[in-house]
Length: 356
Ligand code: PMP
Image 1: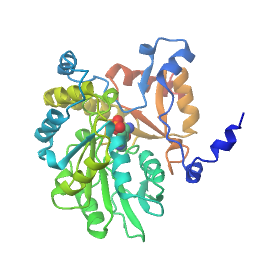
Image 2 (image 1 turned 180 degrees about the horizontal axis):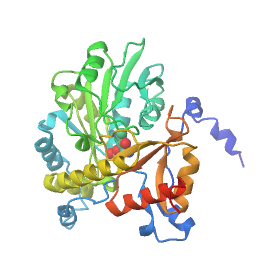
Image 3 (image 1 turned 120 degrees about the vertical axis):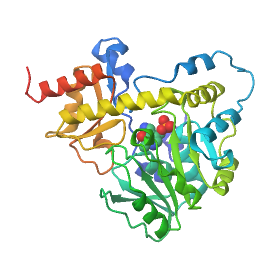
């Protein structure tokens, strides 16, 4: 029998330089290890909406035509109503991760460079790297515009509000990047509903801007894998040529259409989450101001150790040391339900030695 190593040589060489993406501990496995039911675990590591989607979603999932290929038009029309952009400016994918991968596949090839201000969402570097492009990291400086001029630059990734730090970019700083570069600028607005002001309107002014969005966060549909982008029609057209034709399943499309039909539910979730975010922040002097559904905390000791101690108490948070350039003393905690947040705050006080 031939050895695995004979075949492993065929794996593209640049993959050995890529960092693996890391979503933190798996909740099911963690519950098993702790010997507690999954529902007793407090999961504050994945920036999900703890209230779930609109009740309309459950009803929409009842009447599926599962023997047919999915039809994405009703979802795109619902998105048009929500975003104010007609369907020719919209593309949808199985989560924003699929949108990011597809946009990278359209624009990036071996030898290209992709500018990534860090720390930020790890997946940009992975998606760009998988196309053979080289990620160029720059340290994010809050409140100051980045200079995107770089030879061979094909894409710039901006994230607002940023994961994991939570701050939003100003319109001036995004315009300044767009004015100074010929590269395609991908502006990730996964958490925009928690921030208020979107910069998606700039897509009408700049032919090189794509704004990515998701229904995983404010709409509570992370498990349905639904993302979309607002893009100039010429990019949307290229997207439709490259992306798999039926990547979003019929139940996901039905769920997304129903969720977009009940904006009151989404807004009420956002209102509660933002109010809890501010309540938590007032109790956490180590937390940065956030415009998202999570807080970024600076820890005194190593964040990995603190995350492990919290895990022993049944609370999963995100140790940020796997984020490029984040260092070893940062945690990201998702804003959960009030009782979950209280359990987290109490555990933190105990571990800090302020409470027995
Ligand atoms: N962008 C950012 C900044 C994110 O945090 C995430 C999810 N964690 C995504 C994109 C991907 O979202 P989706 O669930 O739609 O793939």
